[in-house]
Length: 249
Image (tube, rainbow, N blue to C red; front, side, top):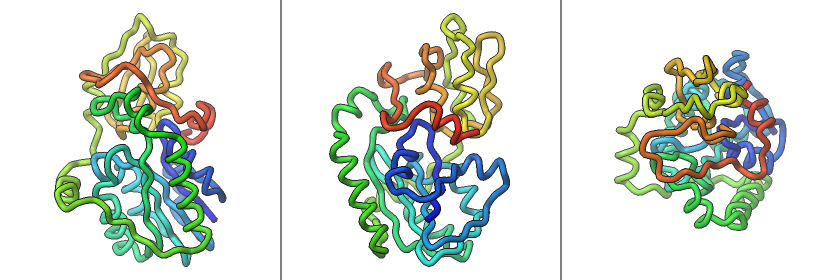
């Protein structure tokens, strides 16, 4: 079994590790120009952004050639999986493969302009998250055929209209050069090499994917976003910074 995943702060790498198999980071695959995979089972693990697929995942799948009798996808989300299942089915049809299983897991959302991390952590128990992931693992092991379509019509319509282009998000970033220690973590966690440290300040080149890994991983809180809902940051407790850096480089 091969698992293709995209992670910024660890949620999706955690899900991928629990499911098991051979793990492949989508950002690394794109950098290495690897799009062809074949196995008895192939899984896609990704976070939901703007009620749908992250841009980087959508672009990868539109180029991917997947050969398997059982292809599955797991979306992690904070509020709703939105339109992600419909997007996946559309991409699969266009690229001549078929999903046998699509499901989702509600986890802590790290999108700081919309969520207060402390409140997110308080209302979403690790026990419930683990229970849902383990249920999905059993489904996959038994080759269950299932397409989860829980999003309501209104959310689907909104999701189909919202762009997943976060290239201008960095216009809302605030960099505190007095706090920056030039550790390079923001550079190394970025999945698209969008961040560069110059004179104790993070510079962005317009390729932001919206994962906010640079903000959440900064050890000195030197990177912030305008109109954050809270000051707390989030990194999945089951995943190390080293693992995320290795995933995105």
